[in-house]
Amino acid sequence: MPIIELQKQVDDWIKKYGVRYFNELTNMAILTEEVGEVARIISRKYGEQSFKDSDHKDLGEELSDVLFVLLCLANQTDTDLQKAFDKKMKIKTKRDADRHQNNEKLS
Image (cartoon, rainbow, N blue to C red):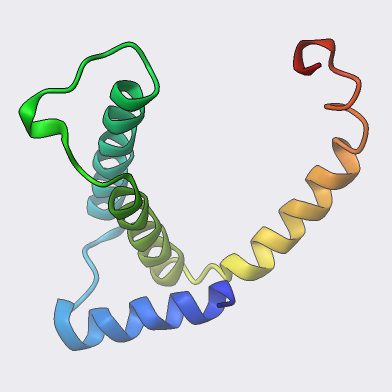
């Protein structure tokens, strides 16, 4: 599904169930919180921290929470994420065309 359709799906959900968007600062705080939940799972599953009983959350669900709030922020700041993402991929491709292949640390 194109990103613009995801943005519309989130916008439709907000209008139907969410009453309105939280303000941008609140959504930024929520995004930070959600990224922290992803970090907690990653640090315990792939890192050296041990799990606590309260840590057993689904990584996919937490990543989806991050995506949802990111799409909210894009909508409320009139950002076309598809356009921005496509532009960024072109920049990264041009900039990094040989960079990683020539990195001895990745060999």
